Image 1: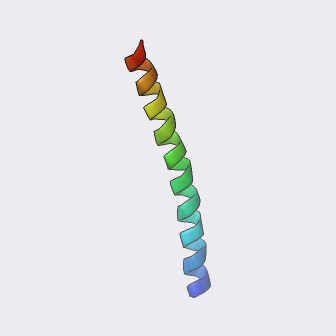
Image 2: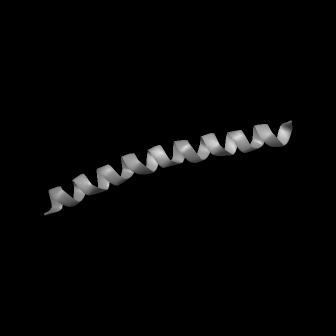
Length: 36
């Protein structure tokens, strides 16, 4: 049970890292658009 929850937690952590990278990329694009 605990091991399964740890696996789920790790998976969510990886997904969060991917989403954070996407957010960063979108923010950088917005900033680039604003700078033009």
